[in-house]
Length: 468
Image 1 (tube, rainbow, N blue to C red):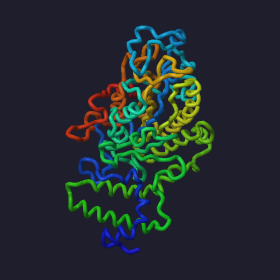
Image 2: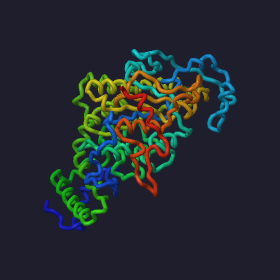
Image 3: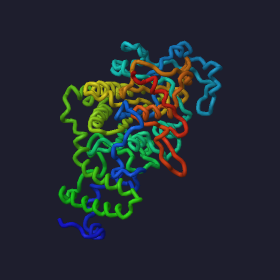
Image 4: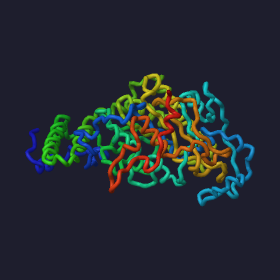
């Protein structure tokens, strides 16, 4: 196959190559990051020494109840069927009717685990074995009651669409350590309920956007090379594209937009072998498969996602987002959370154990959270409604000192009252553990410098979480 002499000749004769090179999400970029990096995904220096190199964000889509997971409230049993005390009815907003709703007691028992005596619900028997590695934050809060806006808040630090997600900010700040895989990968066991806004780069250059990946079949859309073009021919096409792009860039030294496109074409080519290898678990031992629960239901799918997450951080992926759907317990909260616990308990516990055995836990930060919690009052038939005033998250790995709790809610689990942690504070802490100052990690857009934590956020949570 001879080299093409012009763009016109290339476009007329080489259409078959575009499908394999497209990788829609990767190659939609026309812009690249600020600065003068030849490769916009080059590794950047941190603002200060980092504790973690990678983050695995375990997002429980739908809103798990803090009262059935990590925030025991025995007083609810005493008030079962009664109205909330008048002191709590001041939260009588349109979204939550506190005036005539009955208290619903906890649906599961709690026990103390580990040397720390951390209290964890019975729906997480295997995760409870890792209690001394968990730092539970019981005072998470924000102001949003609707799934869509709350999920955007948890991922982007704001209720507004079009803003970058935390993973995009992390890659923008640190670059990529993987030559053959995207720096930011998102996976779900169902659908991305908010679509691409769950992994968007927002107003950051599109090169920092997350890549949605499947756990089976073709991992990324448009990845497979067309059957009518050989690998050498595709390499020749790519080289020709790059020559033109390099020439175009040299003629416009102040315009760095082509840097991202050049990097993405090369990454797309390398991913054709790296991505299928990533999801091929045939080389994993039977003991490892059992550890993650990949061969049994209901943990099989999320177990495979967790196992793939370990393989991703081994290969230098910076930010991995694993979404478990189905936590929206408006009806039978007990039945819902039993099933959800069975889906994630073994896989997440296995992930922590496996990372530790492989020497990766200290460099990998795990964050578990939903978009909000649930009310202490009954909705429908033993269900609970959305509730952002006080809910739980936990962190592990990445230098975290486990076996501790941060913050409290009131006796009914209604509102965070001590050591309150806003979503912006959590994001500031996540960036801080990766060596990034959330106030310095900014991007100029529409006339002002934006950041993940907007105009809020404090990194003081890290001081209470990090091992001395």
